[in-house]
Image (cartoon, rainbow, N blue to C red; front, side, top):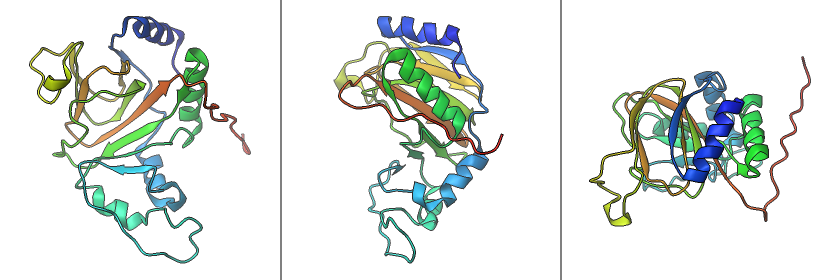
Length: 220
């Protein structure tokens, strides 16, 4: 969970449209939990799994006993793990901790929140989004590995691919490091090692009902 100090800092920096770094507990997710998702085929829908910097069209045949044929066979995602960066969206309910953080953000900021899980398994892979901005505010937590983070205060669209101005933030994110980035703020995150990180994008949309955050517990 985010403590009150972090919540207040996010609220303050939302109003000033400013990014900031902070520390956060990283035990909310693990490589072992990610491994489970790789092998739980119903989670691997074609809309949830994103392979970065890959223009090829992924194809597979219908297979027996699969209720949703749009789910990706595990062997396909396995072939991409060493050559591409990937992320899962619609991952806010992969465990209780992540669901609780989404619920907290939604309540504190009257917004809809998701969790995106970013990962790559290569020590030399630098693939990602490049310099970009998002349509949502973001809390990004480095879970494993190291990433180079750059955030700019003001750069023009035409200069976005190769900014000439000095970044407002230029840092290496290690496990336990986190950053808040308001929407439409230009930034880049480049993996320097194997990487596992979670982004919590959130924005306000009163036309869409928030997700049900109830958590069913069977064994205490």
